[in-house]
Length: 285
Length: 172
Ligand SMILES: Cc1cc2nc3c(=O)[nH]c(=O)nc-3n(C[C@H](O)[C@H](O)[C@H](O)COP(=O)(O)OP(=O)(O)OC[C@H]3O[C@@H](n4cnc5c(N)ncnc54)[C@H](O)[C@@H]3O)c2cc1C
Ligand code: FES
Ligand code: FES
Image 1 (cartoon, rainbow over the protein chains, first blue to last red):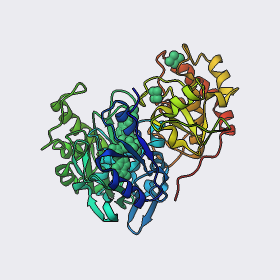
Image 2: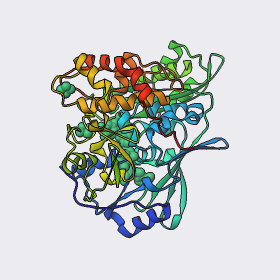
Image 3: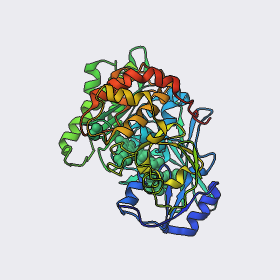
Image 4: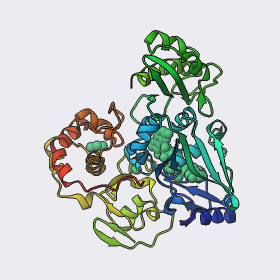
Protein backbone atom coordinates (compact mmCIF):
# COMPACT_ATOMS: atom_id res chain seq x y z
CA UNK A 1 0.00 0.00 0.00
CA UNK A 2 1.03 3.61 -0.37
CA UNK A 3 0.33 6.23 2.29
CA UNK A 4 -2.57 8.65 2.08
CA UNK A 5 -1.56 11.91 0.37
CA UNK A 6 0.08 14.41 2.73
CA UNK A 7 1.90 17.74 2.64
CA UNK A 8 5.59 17.59 3.48
CA UNK A 9 7.21 20.33 5.55
CA UNK A 10 10.91 20.52 6.34
CA UNK A 11 11.35 23.41 8.80
CA UNK A 12 14.87 24.62 9.44
CA UNK A 13 14.49 25.64 13.08
CA UNK A 14 12.80 24.28 16.20
CA UNK A 15 10.67 27.46 16.33
CA UNK A 16 9.38 26.90 12.79
CA UNK A 17 8.67 23.25 13.56
CA UNK A 18 6.70 24.20 16.69
CA UNK A 19 4.77 26.84 14.75
CA UNK A 20 3.92 24.33 12.02
CA UNK A 21 2.81 21.82 14.66
CA UNK A 22 0.67 24.40 16.45
CA UNK A 23 -1.01 25.38 13.20
CA UNK A 24 -1.75 21.84 12.08
CA UNK A 25 -2.85 20.46 15.47
CA UNK A 26 -3.58 16.74 15.38
CA UNK A 27 -3.52 16.72 11.57
CA UNK A 28 0.29 16.70 11.66
CA UNK A 29 2.84 14.02 12.37
CA UNK A 30 6.51 14.57 13.22
CA UNK A 31 8.99 12.56 11.17
CA UNK A 32 12.47 11.82 12.49
CA UNK A 33 14.13 8.94 10.60
CA UNK A 34 10.79 7.63 9.38
CA UNK A 35 11.78 4.04 10.16
CA UNK A 36 8.69 3.47 12.29
CA UNK A 37 6.50 6.24 10.87
CA UNK A 38 6.66 5.20 7.20
CA UNK A 39 5.47 1.62 7.85
CA UNK A 40 2.64 3.09 9.96
CA UNK A 41 1.62 5.50 7.18
CA UNK A 42 1.91 2.79 4.56
CA UNK A 43 -0.41 0.48 6.51
CA UNK A 44 -2.68 3.52 6.84
CA UNK A 45 -2.78 3.12 10.62
CA UNK A 46 -2.36 6.87 10.64
CA UNK A 47 -3.16 9.40 7.93
CA UNK A 48 -1.84 12.85 8.81
CA UNK A 49 -2.44 15.79 6.47
CA UNK A 50 1.05 17.10 7.15
CA UNK A 51 4.33 15.38 7.80
CA UNK A 52 6.90 17.61 9.51
CA UNK A 53 10.43 16.35 8.84
CA UNK A 54 12.93 17.39 11.56
CA UNK A 55 16.02 16.36 9.62
CA UNK A 56 16.79 19.84 8.22
CA UNK A 57 17.02 21.45 11.66
CA UNK A 58 20.67 22.01 12.51
CA UNK A 59 21.52 21.41 16.14
CA UNK A 60 19.13 18.53 16.76
CA UNK A 61 21.74 15.99 15.68
CA UNK A 62 24.98 15.45 17.55
CA UNK A 63 26.65 14.26 20.73
CA UNK A 64 28.48 16.50 23.20
CA UNK A 65 29.44 16.68 26.87
CA UNK A 66 28.41 19.27 29.44
CA UNK A 67 30.21 18.69 32.72
CA UNK A 68 28.98 15.36 34.10
CA UNK A 69 26.39 14.88 31.37
CA UNK A 70 26.42 13.47 27.85
CA UNK A 71 23.97 15.41 25.67
CA UNK A 72 22.52 13.68 22.63
CA UNK A 73 20.30 15.52 20.16
CA UNK A 74 16.97 13.82 19.43
CA UNK A 75 17.84 13.51 15.70
CA UNK A 76 21.15 11.72 16.34
CA UNK A 77 21.04 8.47 14.39
CA UNK A 78 21.51 5.06 15.95
CA UNK A 79 24.76 4.65 14.00
CA UNK A 80 26.04 8.02 15.28
CA UNK A 81 25.53 6.67 18.82
CA UNK A 82 27.23 3.38 18.05
CA UNK A 83 30.23 5.16 16.49
CA UNK A 84 30.60 7.79 19.23
CA UNK A 85 33.68 7.64 21.46
CA UNK A 86 32.01 9.90 24.02
CA UNK A 87 29.09 7.51 24.39
CA UNK A 88 31.46 4.54 24.56
CA UNK A 89 33.41 6.15 27.37
CA UNK A 90 30.59 7.53 29.48
CA UNK A 91 27.43 5.60 28.61
CA UNK A 92 28.62 2.22 27.41
CA UNK A 93 25.25 0.62 28.14
CA UNK A 94 23.53 2.95 25.67
CA UNK A 95 26.10 2.18 22.99
CA UNK A 96 25.83 -1.58 23.46
CA UNK A 97 22.04 -1.38 23.43
CA UNK A 98 21.73 0.78 20.33
CA UNK A 99 24.11 -1.59 18.50
CA UNK A 100 21.36 -4.24 18.92
CA UNK A 101 18.57 -2.15 17.36
CA UNK A 102 17.29 -3.52 14.05
CA UNK A 103 19.97 -3.77 11.32
CA UNK A 104 22.69 -1.46 9.97
CA UNK A 105 20.48 0.04 7.25
CA UNK A 106 17.78 1.02 9.76
CA UNK A 107 20.41 2.29 12.22
CA UNK A 108 21.64 4.73 9.57
CA UNK A 109 18.28 6.53 9.44
CA UNK A 110 16.51 5.71 12.71
CA UNK A 111 17.12 8.21 15.50
CA UNK A 112 17.52 8.05 19.27
CA UNK A 113 14.66 10.49 19.78
CA UNK A 114 12.37 8.77 17.30
CA UNK A 115 12.84 5.37 18.90
CA UNK A 116 12.22 6.74 22.41
CA UNK A 117 9.12 8.77 21.48
CA UNK A 118 7.76 5.85 19.45
CA UNK A 119 7.92 3.84 22.71
CA UNK A 120 7.30 0.39 21.31
CA UNK A 121 7.28 -1.91 24.38
CA UNK A 122 9.70 -4.23 22.55
CA UNK A 123 11.94 -1.29 21.59
CA UNK A 124 15.45 -1.67 22.98
CA UNK A 125 16.57 1.80 23.95
CA UNK A 126 14.04 2.61 26.68
CA UNK A 127 15.49 0.08 29.15
CA UNK A 128 18.99 1.53 28.75
CA UNK A 129 17.72 5.12 29.07
CA UNK A 130 15.89 4.14 32.26
CA UNK A 131 18.87 2.28 33.71
CA UNK A 132 21.15 5.25 33.00
CA UNK A 133 18.75 7.77 34.60
CA UNK A 134 18.44 9.73 31.35
CA UNK A 135 16.57 13.02 31.25
CA UNK A 136 14.43 14.16 28.35
CA UNK A 137 14.27 17.77 27.16
CA UNK A 138 10.88 18.57 25.65
CA UNK A 139 9.89 21.88 24.04
CA UNK A 140 6.31 22.95 23.55
CA UNK A 141 4.24 25.82 22.14
CA UNK A 142 6.05 29.13 22.33
CA UNK A 143 9.33 27.39 23.09
CA UNK A 144 8.43 26.41 26.68
CA UNK A 145 11.02 23.86 27.76
CA UNK A 146 10.73 21.17 30.42
CA UNK A 147 12.97 18.32 31.49
CA UNK A 148 11.42 14.98 32.34
CA UNK A 149 13.26 12.15 34.15
CA UNK A 150 13.23 8.70 32.53
CA UNK A 151 11.08 7.40 35.39
CA UNK A 152 8.26 9.70 34.21
CA UNK A 153 8.93 9.69 30.45
CA UNK A 154 7.36 6.35 29.56
CA UNK A 155 3.60 6.42 30.10
CA UNK A 156 2.11 3.44 28.29
CA UNK A 157 2.32 1.44 25.05
CA UNK A 158 3.42 3.93 22.37
CA UNK A 159 2.81 6.80 24.80
CA UNK A 160 5.37 9.09 26.45
CA UNK A 161 5.44 12.40 28.28
CA UNK A 162 5.76 14.13 24.88
CA UNK A 163 2.34 15.71 24.26
CA UNK A 164 0.68 16.85 21.06
CA UNK A 165 2.35 20.05 19.86
CA UNK A 166 5.63 19.19 21.62
CA UNK A 167 9.03 18.00 20.42
CA UNK A 168 11.71 15.98 22.11
CA UNK A 169 14.96 17.85 21.47
CA UNK A 170 17.60 16.24 23.71
CA UNK A 171 18.38 13.19 25.75
CA UNK A 172 20.76 13.92 28.64
CA UNK A 173 22.64 11.09 30.27
CA UNK A 174 24.64 11.40 33.49
CA UNK A 175 28.15 10.08 32.85
CA UNK A 176 28.68 6.50 33.95
CA UNK A 177 32.40 6.55 33.25
CA UNK A 178 34.11 3.23 33.85
CA UNK A 179 30.89 1.29 34.41
CA UNK A 180 30.73 -2.13 32.71
CA UNK A 181 27.68 -2.80 30.56
CA UNK A 182 25.78 -5.45 28.68
CA UNK A 183 22.51 -5.62 26.75
CA UNK A 184 21.22 -9.20 26.68
CA UNK A 185 18.57 -9.41 23.97
CA UNK A 186 16.67 -12.65 23.56
CA UNK A 187 15.60 -13.22 19.94
CA UNK A 188 15.16 -16.23 17.67
CA UNK A 189 16.60 -14.67 14.51
CA UNK A 190 18.98 -11.77 13.86
CA UNK A 191 17.53 -8.28 14.30
CA UNK A 192 14.14 -9.41 15.56
CA UNK A 193 12.35 -7.24 18.13
CA UNK A 194 13.25 -8.37 21.65
CA UNK A 195 11.14 -11.17 23.14
CA UNK A 196 12.68 -10.03 26.43
CA UNK A 197 15.90 -8.12 26.97
CA UNK A 198 17.89 -6.90 29.95
CA UNK A 199 20.10 -3.81 30.04
CA UNK A 200 22.63 -3.97 32.87
CA UNK A 201 25.36 -1.59 33.91
CA UNK A 202 27.53 -2.04 37.00
CA UNK A 203 30.33 -0.29 38.81
CA UNK A 204 33.03 -2.54 40.22
CA UNK A 205 35.65 -2.05 42.88
CA UNK A 206 38.08 -4.91 43.10
CA UNK A 207 35.82 -7.90 42.52
CA UNK A 208 32.84 -6.29 44.24
CA UNK A 209 29.75 -4.70 42.71
CA UNK A 210 29.36 -1.24 44.25
CA UNK A 211 26.51 0.03 42.06
CA UNK A 212 24.11 -1.63 39.65
CA UNK A 213 21.33 -0.49 37.33
CA UNK A 214 19.04 -2.93 35.53
CA UNK A 215 16.45 -2.08 32.86
CA UNK A 216 13.97 -4.60 31.42
CA UNK A 217 12.61 -4.59 27.84
CA UNK A 218 9.20 -6.06 26.94
CA UNK A 219 8.31 -7.11 30.48
CA UNK A 220 5.27 -4.82 30.47
CA UNK A 221 3.81 -1.95 28.47
CA UNK A 222 6.80 0.29 29.30
CA UNK A 223 10.47 -0.31 30.12
CA UNK A 224 10.97 -1.24 33.79
CA UNK A 225 13.74 -1.06 36.39
CA UNK A 226 14.56 -4.21 38.41
CA UNK A 227 15.23 -2.25 41.60
CA UNK A 228 15.18 -5.29 43.91
CA UNK A 229 17.99 -6.88 41.89
CA UNK A 230 19.93 -3.60 41.92
CA UNK A 231 19.73 -3.55 45.74
CA UNK A 232 20.57 -7.23 46.12
CA UNK A 233 23.71 -6.88 43.98
CA UNK A 234 25.28 -4.19 46.15
CA UNK A 235 28.42 -5.37 47.87
CA UNK A 236 28.25 -8.76 46.17
CA UNK A 237 31.18 -10.41 44.42
CA UNK A 238 30.67 -10.83 40.66
CA UNK A 239 30.48 -14.60 40.92
CA UNK A 240 27.99 -16.84 39.12
CA UNK A 241 26.48 -17.91 42.44
CA UNK A 242 26.02 -14.45 43.96
CA UNK A 243 24.69 -12.89 40.76
CA UNK A 244 22.29 -15.79 40.18
CA UNK A 245 20.86 -15.40 43.68
CA UNK A 246 20.46 -11.63 43.25
CA UNK A 247 18.81 -12.04 39.81
CA UNK A 248 16.05 -14.29 41.11
CA UNK A 249 13.68 -11.38 41.75
CA UNK A 250 14.16 -9.72 38.31
CA UNK A 251 10.53 -10.34 37.28
CA UNK A 252 8.96 -9.44 40.64
CA UNK A 253 6.03 -7.10 40.21
CA UNK A 254 6.05 -7.33 36.40
CA UNK A 255 3.13 -8.34 34.22
CA UNK A 256 4.69 -9.26 30.86
CA UNK A 257 2.54 -9.97 27.80
CA UNK A 258 1.79 -13.41 26.36
CA UNK A 259 2.09 -13.80 22.60
CA UNK A 260 3.26 -16.26 19.94
CA UNK A 261 6.89 -15.77 21.00
CA UNK A 262 6.29 -16.78 24.60
CA UNK A 263 3.76 -16.61 27.41
CA UNK A 264 3.97 -14.40 30.44
CA UNK A 265 5.56 -17.03 32.74
CA UNK A 266 8.19 -17.83 30.14
CA UNK A 267 9.08 -14.14 29.89
CA UNK A 268 9.41 -13.97 33.68
CA UNK A 269 11.77 -16.93 33.58
CA UNK A 270 13.78 -15.28 30.80
CA UNK A 271 14.08 -12.04 32.77
CA UNK A 272 15.92 -13.86 35.57
CA UNK A 273 18.22 -15.78 33.23
CA UNK A 274 19.04 -12.74 31.09
CA UNK A 275 19.63 -10.56 34.16
CA UNK A 276 22.19 -13.05 35.48
CA UNK A 277 23.94 -13.18 32.08
CA UNK A 278 23.86 -9.42 31.58
CA UNK A 279 25.21 -8.60 35.05
CA UNK A 280 28.00 -11.19 34.84
CA UNK A 281 29.04 -9.89 31.43
CA UNK A 282 28.81 -6.25 32.57
CA UNK A 283 30.95 -7.02 35.61
CA UNK A 284 33.57 -8.59 33.38
CA UNK A 285 33.63 -5.88 30.74
CA UNK B 1 17.18 17.96 -6.92
CA UNK B 2 19.25 14.96 -5.98
CA UNK B 3 22.19 13.15 -7.51
CA UNK B 4 21.51 9.61 -8.69
CA UNK B 5 24.53 7.57 -9.78
CA UNK B 6 26.53 10.78 -10.33
CA UNK B 7 23.79 12.38 -12.47
CA UNK B 8 22.02 15.49 -11.11
CA UNK B 9 18.33 14.61 -11.25
CA UNK B 10 15.21 16.68 -10.76
CA UNK B 11 11.99 14.95 -9.82
CA UNK B 12 8.50 16.35 -9.41
CA UNK B 13 6.73 13.94 -7.10
CA UNK B 14 3.99 13.72 -4.50
CA UNK B 15 5.58 13.82 -1.02
CA UNK B 16 4.35 10.32 -0.23
CA UNK B 17 6.51 8.69 -2.92
CA UNK B 18 9.27 6.55 -1.44
CA UNK B 19 12.81 6.68 -2.76
CA UNK B 20 12.24 3.10 -3.90
CA UNK B 21 9.22 3.99 -6.03
CA UNK B 22 10.97 7.12 -7.30
CA UNK B 23 13.90 5.03 -8.51
CA UNK B 24 11.85 2.21 -10.01
CA UNK B 25 8.70 3.90 -11.33
CA UNK B 26 9.95 7.39 -12.16
CA UNK B 27 13.62 6.97 -13.05
CA UNK B 28 13.14 3.42 -14.39
CA UNK B 29 16.13 2.19 -12.40
CA UNK B 30 14.60 -1.20 -11.71
CA UNK B 31 17.77 -2.81 -10.38
CA UNK B 32 16.73 -1.85 -6.85
CA UNK B 33 14.15 -4.42 -5.77
CA UNK B 34 10.97 -4.21 -3.71
CA UNK B 35 10.66 -7.19 -1.38
CA UNK B 36 8.65 -6.46 1.73
CA UNK B 37 8.23 -2.67 1.34
CA UNK B 38 8.38 -2.38 5.14
CA UNK B 39 12.03 -2.48 6.15
CA UNK B 40 12.43 -6.17 6.87
CA UNK B 41 14.28 -7.72 3.92
CA UNK B 42 17.00 -5.39 2.62
CA UNK B 43 16.20 -5.97 -1.08
CA UNK B 44 15.83 -2.20 -1.58
CA UNK B 45 19.22 -1.28 -0.06
CA UNK B 46 20.90 1.70 -1.77
CA UNK B 47 23.71 4.02 -0.71
CA UNK B 48 22.97 7.61 0.35
CA UNK B 49 26.18 9.62 0.71
CA UNK B 50 27.98 6.28 0.94
CA UNK B 51 25.83 4.88 3.77
CA UNK B 52 23.42 2.00 3.23
CA UNK B 53 19.77 2.79 3.76
CA UNK B 54 16.46 1.16 2.87
CA UNK B 55 14.88 2.92 -0.11
CA UNK B 56 11.44 1.65 0.94
CA UNK B 57 11.70 3.45 4.31
CA UNK B 58 12.97 6.72 2.83
CA UNK B 59 10.84 9.35 1.14
CA UNK B 60 12.32 10.77 -2.04
CA UNK B 61 11.84 14.19 -0.40
CA UNK B 62 14.21 13.21 2.41
CA UNK B 63 17.17 12.77 0.06
CA UNK B 64 16.89 16.18 -1.58
CA UNK B 65 20.44 17.38 -2.21
CA UNK B 66 22.00 14.01 -1.35
CA UNK B 67 23.94 11.49 -3.45
CA UNK B 68 22.15 8.22 -4.12
CA UNK B 69 23.96 5.19 -5.54
CA UNK B 70 22.00 2.19 -6.84
CA UNK B 71 23.21 -1.09 -8.33
CA UNK B 72 23.16 0.59 -11.78
CA UNK B 73 25.78 3.01 -10.46
CA UNK B 74 28.22 0.50 -8.99
CA UNK B 75 28.99 -1.83 -11.89
CA UNK B 76 31.06 -3.33 -13.26
CA UNK B 77 32.37 -4.12 -9.78
CA UNK B 78 34.73 -6.89 -8.58
CA UNK B 79 32.10 -8.00 -6.06
CA UNK B 80 29.68 -8.75 -8.90
CA UNK B 81 32.25 -11.05 -10.49
CA UNK B 82 32.88 -12.69 -7.11
CA UNK B 83 29.12 -13.34 -6.65
CA UNK B 84 29.14 -15.22 -9.98
CA UNK B 85 32.34 -17.12 -9.14
CA UNK B 86 31.19 -18.08 -5.63
CA UNK B 87 27.53 -18.84 -6.46
CA UNK B 88 26.39 -15.98 -4.25
CA UNK B 89 22.91 -16.09 -5.76
CA UNK B 90 20.20 -18.31 -7.15
CA UNK B 91 17.15 -16.31 -8.26
CA UNK B 92 19.08 -13.03 -7.92
CA UNK B 93 16.25 -10.99 -6.44
CA UNK B 94 18.17 -10.07 -3.29
CA UNK B 95 21.48 -9.55 -5.13
CA UNK B 96 21.39 -5.80 -5.94
CA UNK B 97 20.60 -5.11 -2.29
CA UNK B 98 23.31 -7.52 -1.12
CA UNK B 99 25.92 -5.86 -3.33
CA UNK B 100 25.04 -2.27 -2.34
CA UNK B 101 24.89 -3.39 1.29
CA UNK B 102 28.31 -5.09 1.12
CA UNK B 103 29.90 -2.00 -0.46
CA UNK B 104 28.43 0.18 2.30
CA UNK B 105 29.40 -2.37 4.94
CA UNK B 106 33.07 -2.32 3.94
CA UNK B 107 33.09 1.50 3.89
CA UNK B 108 31.56 1.55 7.40
CA UNK B 109 34.11 -0.98 8.58
CA UNK B 110 36.93 1.11 7.18
CA UNK B 111 35.39 4.10 8.93
CA UNK B 112 35.69 2.14 12.19
CA UNK B 113 32.16 1.00 12.98
CA UNK B 114 31.87 -1.88 15.44
CA UNK B 115 29.19 -4.57 15.40
CA UNK B 116 27.37 -6.52 18.11
CA UNK B 117 29.59 -9.57 17.66
CA UNK B 118 32.54 -7.30 18.39
CA UNK B 119 33.40 -7.85 22.07
CA UNK B 120 34.74 -4.36 22.51
CA UNK B 121 32.60 -1.90 20.55
CA UNK B 122 35.36 0.71 20.64
CA UNK B 123 37.78 -1.26 18.46
CA UNK B 124 37.34 -2.40 14.89
CA UNK B 125 37.85 -6.13 14.35
CA UNK B 126 38.85 -7.84 11.12
CA UNK B 127 36.12 -8.69 8.65
CA UNK B 128 35.91 -12.38 9.54
CA UNK B 129 33.04 -14.45 8.10
CA UNK B 130 31.28 -14.11 11.49
CA UNK B 131 31.61 -10.31 11.41
CA UNK B 132 30.38 -10.26 7.80
CA UNK B 133 27.31 -12.35 8.67
CA UNK B 134 26.38 -9.97 11.51
CA UNK B 135 27.04 -6.86 9.46
CA UNK B 136 25.01 -8.20 6.51
CA UNK B 137 22.12 -9.44 8.70
CA UNK B 138 19.77 -6.80 7.30
CA UNK B 139 19.84 -8.50 3.89
CA UNK B 140 17.78 -11.66 3.63
CA UNK B 141 18.20 -14.23 0.86
CA UNK B 142 15.22 -16.52 0.46
CA UNK B 143 17.26 -18.82 -1.78
CA UNK B 144 19.70 -19.27 1.10
CA UNK B 145 22.82 -18.37 -0.88
CA UNK B 146 24.42 -17.02 2.30
CA UNK B 147 27.57 -19.14 2.17
CA UNK B 148 28.40 -17.97 -1.34
CA UNK B 149 27.56 -14.37 -0.44
CA UNK B 150 29.95 -14.44 2.52
CA UNK B 151 32.70 -16.07 0.43
CA UNK B 152 32.29 -13.46 -2.31
CA UNK B 153 32.59 -10.65 0.23
CA UNK B 154 35.64 -12.25 1.89
CA UNK B 155 37.30 -12.51 -1.55
CA UNK B 156 36.61 -8.89 -2.44
CA UNK B 157 36.81 -7.05 0.91
CA UNK B 158 40.41 -5.82 0.49
CA UNK B 159 39.72 -4.45 -3.00
CA UNK B 160 36.47 -2.86 -1.79
CA UNK B 161 38.24 -1.22 1.17
CA UNK B 162 40.59 0.48 -1.28
CA UNK B 163 37.67 1.71 -3.37
CA UNK B 164 35.62 2.81 -0.34
CA UNK B 165 34.77 6.50 -0.08
CA UNK B 166 35.48 8.35 3.16
CA UNK B 167 32.25 8.57 5.18
CA UNK B 168 31.11 11.73 6.92
CA UNK B 169 32.01 11.43 10.59
CA UNK B 170 29.50 11.85 13.41
CA UNK B 171 28.89 15.57 13.94
CA UNK B 172 30.49 16.91 17.15
C1 LIG C 1 12.23 -3.81 10.27
C2 LIG C 1 12.42 -2.97 11.50
C3 LIG C 1 13.01 -3.54 12.63
C4 LIG C 1 13.21 -2.80 13.78
N1 LIG C 1 13.77 -3.40 14.86
C5 LIG C 1 13.94 -2.71 16.01
C6 LIG C 1 14.51 -3.32 17.16
O1 LIG C 1 14.91 -4.49 17.14
N2 LIG C 1 14.63 -2.57 18.29
C7 LIG C 1 14.23 -1.27 18.36
O2 LIG C 1 14.38 -0.65 19.40
N3 LIG C 1 13.71 -0.65 17.27
C8 LIG C 1 13.56 -1.34 16.11
N4 LIG C 1 13.01 -0.70 15.02
C9 LIG C 1 12.59 0.70 15.12
C10 LIG C 1 13.75 1.65 14.91
O3 LIG C 1 14.51 1.73 16.11
C11 LIG C 1 13.27 3.04 14.56
O4 LIG C 1 14.39 3.76 14.20
C12 LIG C 1 12.61 3.83 15.67
O5 LIG C 1 11.58 3.15 16.32
C13 LIG C 1 11.98 5.09 15.13
O6 LIG C 1 12.96 6.02 14.89
P1 LIG C 1 12.81 7.07 13.72
O7 LIG C 1 13.85 8.07 13.98
O8 LIG C 1 12.82 6.39 12.43
O9 LIG C 1 11.40 7.73 14.07
P2 LIG C 1 10.13 8.00 13.13
O10 LIG C 1 9.66 6.74 12.53
O11 LIG C 1 10.38 9.12 12.24
O12 LIG C 1 9.11 8.48 14.28
C14 LIG C 1 8.56 7.58 15.22
C15 LIG C 1 7.49 8.29 16.05
O13 LIG C 1 8.06 9.23 16.94
C16 LIG C 1 7.61 10.55 16.68
N5 LIG C 1 8.80 11.41 16.82
C17 LIG C 1 10.02 11.15 16.27
N6 LIG C 1 10.92 12.06 16.67
C18 LIG C 1 10.27 12.92 17.49
C19 LIG C 1 10.69 14.07 18.24
N7 LIG C 1 11.97 14.51 18.22
N8 LIG C 1 9.76 14.71 18.98
C20 LIG C 1 8.48 14.26 19.03
N9 LIG C 1 8.03 13.19 18.34
C21 LIG C 1 8.92 12.51 17.58
C22 LIG C 1 7.00 10.51 15.29
O14 LIG C 1 5.96 11.43 15.15
C23 LIG C 1 6.50 9.08 15.21
O15 LIG C 1 5.25 8.96 15.81
C24 LIG C 1 12.81 -1.42 13.83
C25 LIG C 1 12.24 -0.84 12.70
C26 LIG C 1 12.04 -1.59 11.55
C27 LIG C 1 11.44 -0.94 10.35
S1 FES D 1 11.73 -3.76 0.35
FE1 FES D 1 12.80 -2.38 1.63
S2 FES D 1 13.46 -3.69 3.21
FE2 FES D 1 12.20 -5.02 2.08
S1 FES E 1 19.27 -15.24 -4.61
FE1 FES E 1 17.14 -15.55 -4.41
S2 FES E 1 16.68 -14.33 -2.72
FE2 FES E 1 18.82 -14.30 -2.70
